[in-house]
Length: 257
Ligand SMILES: Nc1ncnc2c1ncn2[C@@H]1O[C@H](COP(=O)(O)OP(=O)(O)OP(=O)(O)O)[C@@H](O)[C@H]1O
Ligand SMILES: [Mg+2]
Image (cartoon, rainbow, N blue to C red):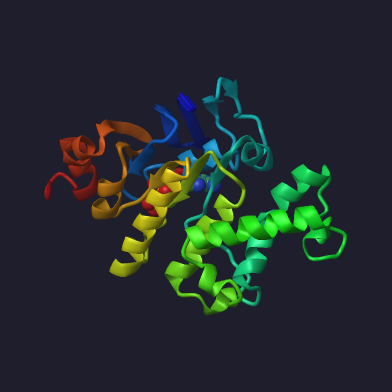
């Protein structure tokens, strides 16, 4: 098992946002996380990525508990999370955003946090070439290469979200955690996203994806869990989870289910 979550719990004061969540992810899988608004999906991924600290429970990554690590250390271990809304700099280009996301590589290569080296001349030719190649490759993979010199402010919303995915990918994740990558996208953008995510899997990346779009994630995810009030109410094949009575009721309410 690549990732093993055991009894993961997060309390915010009197509110239990995530309650004794237990599940595992195997290498190469695409795992879906469903659940109505406020059911604890984002909190669960933020706990895994080290952005939030659990109140209790374990997050075991390749046999080691990573629940005390910082987000940067977690990313170094190969777990990277994208955000529901990527916070981009409108005046920086797509390629410049990718350079910022590369600072993990630079840190690894140089052993220090010299962000300046990303834009300055102090980077060695080898490192410069490696980063440029990597950035181009990821932009190709995410269908953004033709936009590499466009300012982020000129991208469509789908393009912005895709840049968020590409920035995550340039950190070389083994497991990419995606928070609602399809929300706000039109039909064609969703088809594009679907194709990109399948390509990422082919490139060996394991994916864990939150989304409300049953058509999109229902087709994509091999297995899924469904959360309600912070607890898992169903898990198994995605088709079974989506047909589960408790899941349908959680989404639609008793009356409509
Ligand atoms: N930092 C925080 N402080 C206090 N409460 C929080 C915090 N973050 C989340 N919550 C609460 O925890 C619960 C779960 O929130 P979370 O964002 O994980 O839900 P979600 O399933 O991602 O919802 P959505 O589908 O709307 O994105 C909600 O009741 C939310 O208000
Ligand atoms: Mg959320």
